[in-house]
Length: 507
Image 1: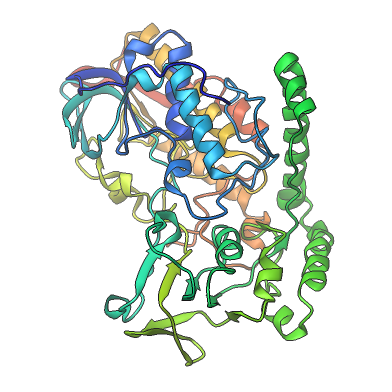
Image 2 (image 1 turned 120 degrees about the vertical axis):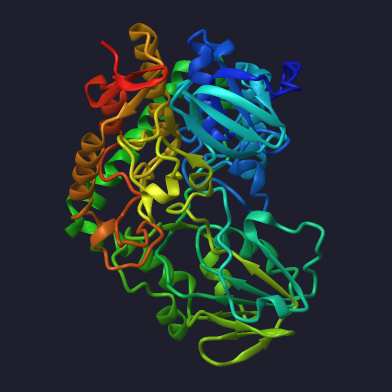
């Protein structure tokens, strides 16, 4: 999507009050704010963003090779289709430009205050509003939408001796572009979705790359292709054709969950594709054994790559399949006890989705934080609201992540739910809504029960989907259309409507 419009100016000061305060201007925040703006409520919305631009993860993750692993026709906002995508799987720079352009065209930018970080928020029962502290001052809000993202804070593991290392250290989500990797001995810790993208991009510059792998992952081909000028022209002149393509891609992606959640006995057949790729791309049988996963395919996130396995098979790349044990002043020591001299350590160790930092900043009715309420195991009614936190709505909340489709679809479903909740508040003249604790527990029980037989729970892996209590508080267990249907109407019967200064139901 080309930026053909002149950017409208963003907010320059934090107002003293707003009806809806959205925290974060990534896909989630833009979906929530965009829904309200299109509903004619632009004046009700203020977005605060800690960075200087919109984009969230697609602004922050700039490592070499960073790209989406969901087809872009589906991984885009439904209200802002673009006929200009260059590939079926867009890379980070293109996604970032898309989000910036959407922010300008939709009016989101005009309602955003940049360089404004959330420092804390407390629910005020007397006035029925959120009192919010930011790096740019204080603001009260009737409604608070937390859209800071589940994959926004890098997970840097506590490795013995890391502080003593004399070389360069950084996480892939905070890539050090000022550091030249040419001719260096590089240690890469982690073999997840980020590492499979950046390692093939840096290997030609490096003298040697050592990859530390705790668990082998299933790798499948990435069917990426360039979109031609004829195809783009068709999308531009007949927008319906792009909607049809989006629908077809959505349908194919939904079919995946049939195997992941219902017919899991078919997964060994799916694994044959990955096994064939491993055999074709890694001639060394000893290396293949190291790269053979020990759990059911789909239990952890499958990795889409055509370059990862051939890169690991190179003579100037070492795979240490026992993980990183400790760091010395000049090198790294694997769990195999061998010390290897390195100049740079790059962590591709993911994020902390079951421990979102924003949960430590939000204080509910009883003064405790959301993190304290969750106690290591996040839960939310329909993935959006939490009892004891009136008028707080979560984007990308607990049990809304996917293993088969686009999170943008889920975010837009949540945005609809928030819009309907606000409409209900207006109609009832209610100051606040608080979800019933029993309803929240019932919902969590149903989701947990549905997850029990899925591959994400029963596939025999250790994944970031499981929280510290051993509960899957991340994944959505079934079709995404069921989630959209569930959130299409606001379930007022599961909420208490609150008047200002009273924790009681409105008559």
